[in-house]
Image 1 (cartoon, rainbow, N blue to C red):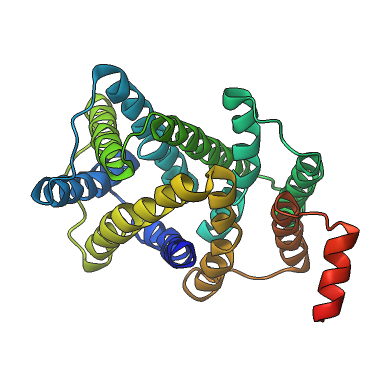
Image 2: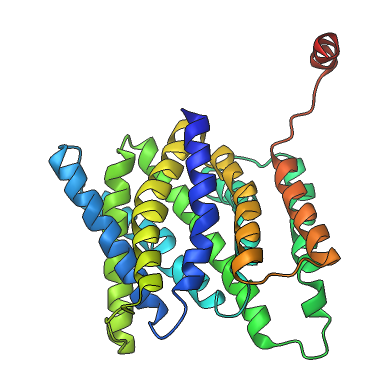
Length: 301
């Protein structure tokens, strides 16, 4: 079951980044996010109501769902959608894989789960990887503020996603059902982004093109309902740290698609940066073998 959930997260989230790219245009980012999670939360609300799985939550639990909605289904995506106008979405997905490190850090901050020693090596590799990945742009004579803003917003959105993971763990420790909390959190995220759009004076009219509407439905039904459902089920079953391992794999899917549709060019620094970041993530899951385990492996080799 865990392997199936991993596969769903990797394939679906690996392809959602190009869908975000297809939504770039005249529609404001908060409006695109509003419609995405309006469709997703309404779908979940109908399905859970018909199957009688939707549970009412107390005021305190709803408050945490509001916070989760802002972190996972709202402001973090505002960061990602805005950054997509400045940097390649495939590169965004690579930065997003840093969620592994953020989850380890936040688990210590909020749950006092001390990160393993390998965390510091992984963090160093991750940061070095990001610098290497963007080295060509960072050393260019016409280094733009938008590039730095795109990188910064991608990191900020990833940290927001990690905070949402911590809130999801809080829900599970209280015995709350994952799909119920996801539904309420998505509804709150929808309301938050709708409020932002109203304050900004944005038009709620979507782009009626086939590419925009197709991307919207894919992001809502697959990227949000199925993707987040699978991911937070993994968090519930194996923990936030291990679930975040899926973010190690889907950048490879996203970059492959970006190479075809966004014309991403692979320079040597990009390859090296990607390897450093993915190696840093792998280090987080490395388990040193003791002598007995090593001998056992040699016997079966």
